[in-house]
Amino acid sequence: MSEQQVRGDNQPAIRIKMLPKDTNELGTIFGGIILSQIDLAGAVEAHRWGCDRLVTAAMREVEFHEPVFVGDLVSYYTETVRKGRTSITVQVTVEAERRLRGRGRVKVTEAEVVYVHIDPEGRPVPVPVPVPDGPRP
Image (cartoon, rainbow, N blue to C red):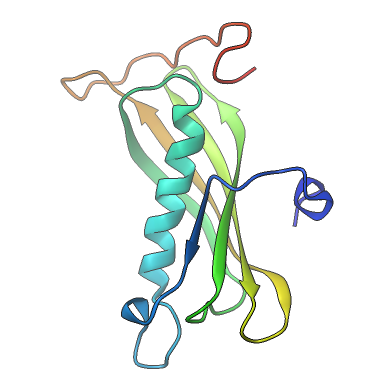
């Protein structure tokens, strides 16, 4: 867990309550549901750079530390770790608040996601240069 998350001064990109419809036969949330939400959260961070069109190029180093259960409130924290000419790499850390299980917050998953900024024809284009007081420093 990053120091920002421990201090509580980082807001999640998205936060979702897990429901029974997302469970597998073992009663835990499908990993694919979590992967989909990691992709959405990472895209929120990448859009903050002013990219209007993005595609997911890679999802690296996905690590599932603990299962996610029905009733968990799951938060997806994001941080830009690299900005290339046409790509943005985002670290996504996933925490679950185990309200029904009395365990507080636990880190359940993390991943690094690479997005490519594209034009309407799907060709890579440069990531915009941030402006003062713009989307990202």
